[in-house]
Amino acid sequence: FNQHIFFLPIFFGLFTLILLCILSFVYFPWISERLLWREYHLLTAYLGPFCLLIAFIHVYISWKYDYYSHHQYLFNLKFFSMFLPLIVLVLSFIIYGIIHPIIKLIQWNRTRPRKNKTSTIITKDTSLLP
Image (tube, rainbow, N blue to C red; front, side, top):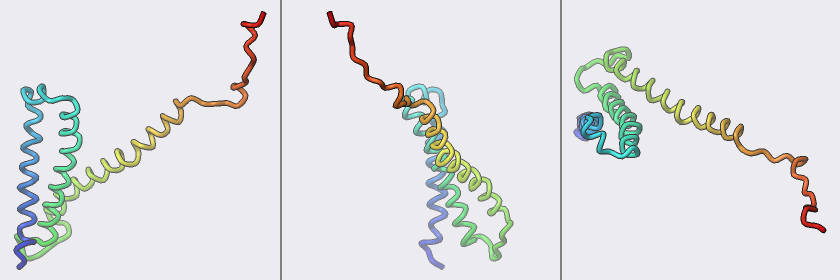
């Protein structure tokens, strides 16, 4: 039994627990009112999905090597506990990694100033001539 592989799910589990404790402190009013908007947004928008990813890795390693039982089934409780975080991670990647940049590009394309060749006719200013 490899001791290094046995330690990995414990490490990821403890690391996730510590990060989730830090993330839970952000929502206390006396802490969140002292944070700048960038700090609050960074902690809530990026630390939450990162914790979810680390928790998914923790459960995946425990399920893959199945330390606590002798038989490994595909549809057991550990698999179902991986399924929902995996859906959340994939959907957040699709929304924020693919759909959101495409929508920003479409909005930029609609609001950018257009240059028509027919509208840029240069005329001589005759108002200053005698």
